[in-house]
Image (cartoon, rainbow, N blue to C red):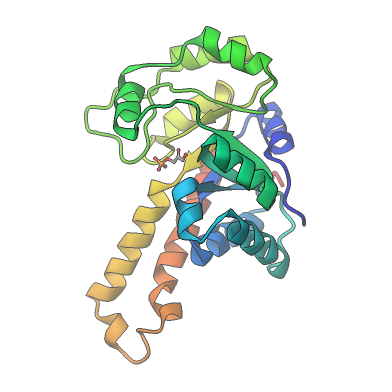
Length: 258
Ligand code: 13P
């Protein structure tokens, strides 16, 4: 099935009180693992590509070509959107030209460390969110105490009060929750009940991949027989990504919603 725009997918999710997962991709293994899991679970899915990952994969054109061809070759029938994650103005333009079906313009304009620090202490202003919603964007990611990467021990949790106010001001607009890694299940469920229809997960797949690969090597399996073959070496990490994606899709409630 051709790649689809994320807007319809998220409207449906908001109406159905579940969230669609955005899983970031880094290479072929990541893409294949996420697509196959979505198909097995009959779930819609969004493949996220950061500017850095796009560059790593030699450019957005390569990424779009790979995703489209893989979607077709694997016979994927569930809705798949290819989304630019935290795009610059130029990046958004390049991705639209390359065939991405969804883009995020990150206008936060802060260096990462400062952005992260501010995200930890600040929450988005509900009135600013309303102004953005009125512009007619398809989805909105607002900071409600969420951060990228692992949450620190002293993390205060998501601010549901802010989310509630944002939801009240933005109405039908699907809301996006970044930093899905490590948010406890009850908070995820509450966020979905308050209008979150898209949840981004990146670090957790990286950690699953890393842990499984480490185990394989530490067990010396890369030195047994043809265990050094990259198709064997990367297989445990691939399976680990699949398991993480499955767990998230079940938690987000998108299983069977394709
Ligand atoms: P995590 O890496 O914390 O899962 O965040 C992913 C994300 O929000 C991508 O935009």
